[in-house]
Length: 380
Image (cartoon, rainbow, N blue to C red; front, side, top):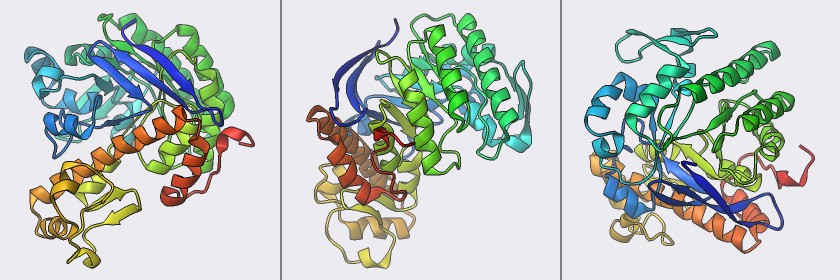
């Protein structure tokens, strides 16, 4: 098995669990957050800075790397790890979300997806087999099959068709896999329909993937719908394998999903917010470009031990951001990535201490905007 998952402890008051994801390039404590390095780099950070901030596994994007610089060049360079100088585990997604986001430029049939590049307008076609070929060339440790996701406004027939197509593509992806050292995760789709989600999860589990991802959420559906979908889906996934919620990275949603038993997450949100001057702290979000921080000589967060907080003030970072200096973006990004890893580590400790429910209530009051309380207790 190319990856293994070991559950270390299950919280007594929720569905949350602490575990360990064991890959061919090292072990990762869970629950974990994966910074997104879309084009083979987490924006504004070096690999060494990522490691210093606590990153142990990161994500790169199949669609974008296929378009540029091209998977064949990456393979010629010795694979993505060597190309980007990242020594730890790497996960690549299938590109399904990126194609979904290009809705006016793409069309789907049972064989694959036709789309036009957002870079130069050139025509391309993704099939399950090609997506597997691309990821094999990249050499990532955890890979995703091509899937079809739909938006929250899609009708029931469209959602059901996309789920069935995702299952067929999952089977084709398994048949096309050539590198047994790569862990291919199945992706659960089905919109916010609990019946379809359970069906998809059960059929994927029968295929015996080494891990399972939950896709198609955080695409505009209400928070209550996300919570209900997760509550219906996660119990269908085997406890001895990792569970990965794709594209979710806000602290309130992380709390929600961990409480329901999810182990792995990724999102561009922390780095994207940093580029616009917004940082996470243990007191909530701060927008450092606001005038109130013009003469604030305190660190971004006095309770944070990152490089940014140990060396620079809010006033200095605000000055850099307002002056469009690259260092301002870099310092804010380093802090946000460090904070995300600290937040996940604190969640893990709360699980180990059987105190996740109180941790959830406390930090939802700081970061929450939806007020969903203890969804693991039922009623969703």
